[in-house]
Image (tube, rainbow, N blue to C red; front, side, top):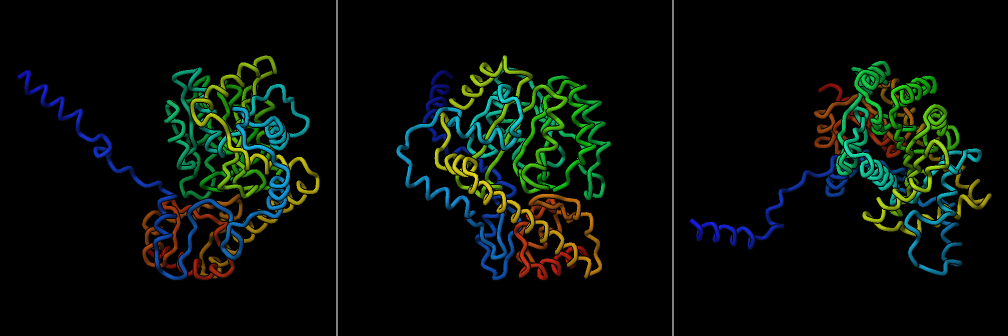
Length: 410
């Protein structure tokens, strides 16, 4: 018996570990993008991954970014490490961009993170490390990676109602009822500051007032994902929900991404802003943010940060950048309107899309119809019916509308 146990242990220890790993499922969105790349069919259309595209189907480098990079390459003198939280010029610039010039910045512990995802994880880690057992509420539906990020930080995830039965609008009463009846003090509530991903359906400013009051009444922690500033109503206009929340809630977490509005997808530039009731606890809060970052990625990357600082710190470049954001938002809006008109010409009412904002729209198509579009028409959309409106173009609009019309007959 002893020899048998020893033999089993030796065999177990000597067996390769990595060969025993199960195959992980592909990412629900990036997996579709990979399948699209392998699809040999001409005329294929990709409406999955959330990247801005111009009418030629390209994800362009903004002219403001190009000019900023030229300046950086001429003047940069080092590739040394940045501070754990990033350069002070960056955290100051983005804090003003997100919170406005008149905010009390002594309340803000700010850090440069690798994209909005890095901000979400650093913020979640900071909360979870100091308050074990926290719960986080996510909208149903939400961005596919939200649950994984918070679960990896050790937080229990719950969901609150977001869409109505037809998946064409916000079930605001259901959302409030869930959070009011089931929420607890110190529960974290993940909110999309604008351009809700994946639906494009946002609360009105009046509804934001009720959400803000509820967070304060229940002593919950608002945790805002602000990935699309400028893509809803405008760079300043899109901060209005955030300021509504800040007026009534002394402690708020904001996670910003500059992938979309600066087009810096591959540079991974984001920011975590943890806002306290006053400046007395900011130093301690910042130390905890640093501790969370240090054991994760240690220091942020330099180049993308330098681009943002250069643009926001120069009046001419900043004005150019703001005009480019306006142009991207206008193009997305025009494509959404064009799709609605195209479907209307085929006798189908997609007018509910008109109130949706940002890069994404929930079309109401189901998983079977999405799969049919992929298999039969080489049109790739997410199984939930979400489409990247920025992936549409005048050249592909008729093809898409005809295909969706056929899919609706299934």
